[in-house]
Length: 119
Image 1 (tube, rainbow, N blue to C red):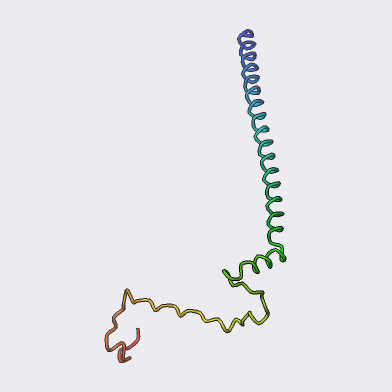
Image 2 (cartoon, rainbow, N blue to C red):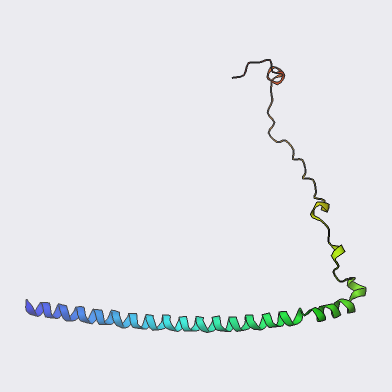
């Protein structure tokens, strides 16, 4: 009986060793994936910083004013002046359309005239 328990314990230890070996490789693969993701995030941050710098360079006020002057004939852009802005009460909002009645309710003449007793 002892021999059987020793063999069973040895098989259990070997099974646990095999499981730990497999988990070790899964963990190493997950760590590698995390490192790759960190590298991709770093590259994305670097690209984002470069794009922000390019956007700031392209949106310089003196450059935009020069572009507006160069393309005045085609675009007709003028500098913004305070009198170019209006008041909120000057905005004309469209009147919403009147929707058609799709499910009318018919009333009898007595109820409409008020001669019938209310419930």
